[in-house]
Amino acid sequence: MNPSRLITAFLLVVPALLFIAAAESAPDAPAAPGAQEEAQPAATKSPAPAQAAPAATPPLRTMQRPDALPGEALADASATSAIEGAIRSDPALAGSDISVNTERGVVSLTGRVANREQSAIASAYANRQLGVLRVDNDLSIPAQ
Image (cartoon, rainbow, N blue to C red; front, side, top):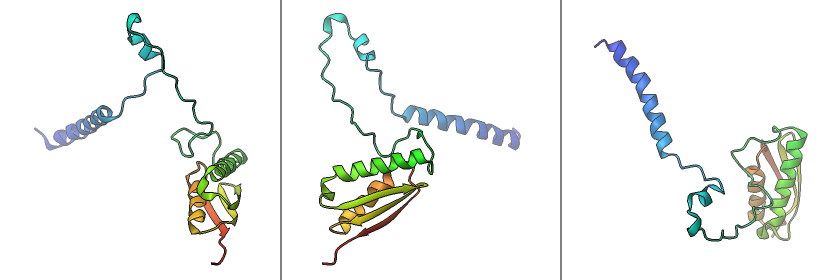
């Protein structure tokens, strides 16, 4: 067999095998809510358990495409409100006075915190937010 044919066959077969292996090892997609009920016979159906209400705020980072691109006013406002909400709801940041401002994807954190840990937590919330390009942490820590 010609070496060039062997190389061509290798280059065509290996990616296909890798794709098949990746597809087989990927987790299954979650079933639709009504699909499980239809699979059960009518005689064995049990009352559906109460499902917890979905969280009011979406996760900070997702694989979904954002509504606005970083740097747009809508993305900046969305990032600011999400970061402020996360900071306010965290009990570890109780007693801190943090202001959040986002402009063109750059988040500025200003105000006072009790210690370095609170400063790091606030920065982490800002860094995790979708649409944030950079975080400027200007939080002041009182001298001890």
